[in-house]
Image 1: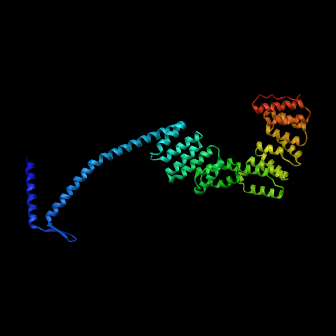
Image 2 (image 1 turned 30 degrees about the vertical axis):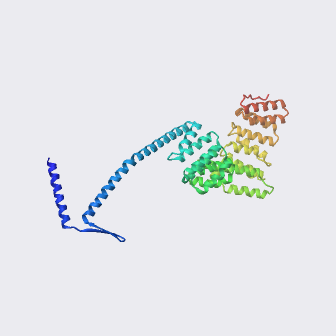
Length: 409
């Protein structure tokens, strides 16, 4: 009751004030358009504006009442569609993780068109298609991935390359990797794949040039880099050994240049010392080669060093045999030293001594190589039956059969 009285009083006050304002400020509004003019009082204009505003609000409410249900319906439909795509993507990624390639490819491809991250769907589907060996489908899916998100062309390109490398197709991957390396010279994964490709294709000079980038971008640890550099230099020495030209001076210079750019830490690797010595011997520098090997062997009784010492060319066989026999005091049970001594004995045509060393080596290590050497020496000594038996035992050793040492009577 009290509220009604208050409202009535306020209404009366407002009406009185409005009546006073209309009487106090009658005014008028004149609107002229061309030759037409319309004149009305100020308060009529105020009422007209209020009426238009109310009409606008009514119309706006009617439009909302008609349109909003449709918008809600559309949004609900979109949400349901997105949820369905998300479920398909989830199932596709799960199938991919579980190795169900056909299912993964189908689900990820089906959900890609409506997915927020269609690129991921297509890349996953391409990986599944690659596992199925469907190269045409892989190429198609990667094309779709590229179109879905052109900003991430690196991800698509790397996927293409990774799949090629995974299939062992390094020749096809190499041009793409070199292009990517030119655009992204510090990318660790690109560097890693490029190094693998160069290594598989035996492009040792190119791999050597890549070492600085591999080190600078921490693609490999220090020990891995060292082993890689040793492997590169070993292969380069072997390649040079197999491709010596008629010009000995040019051959020697090529070896000098190769050895000069080899780091001291790398030079100390036994396999490199052995191959360097072999090349020196091929180039007529057997004396220098023998000194290098002798110095290295006394520090490291490495198999490669001993094998190279036993096979060294030149006229130093007698002196080498004497030197190596002196090592027996320290390494009497070293089968690699015994095998080297056998080789040196053969070079001096000391067949009986070669046989003794080989039999001693065979007691320590039943390698097929030792059987083959012993069979050849037995043939030189005219013991052909024993030679055939050793060949047979060597073959059994290669094939995993049991071997029995024939003890010389």
